[in-house]
Image: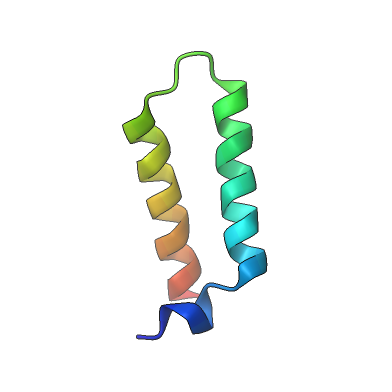
Length: 48
């Protein structure tokens, strides 16, 4: 599986912006929760 073919720069930017916004919304966000969310979004983007 070629990850770079499925995970475009635009999609990666969207994932990071989503994660940033989630971090700004929550007062008490654990790093592991943020990493798991990023991982989930990347996996979904690669499977598209």
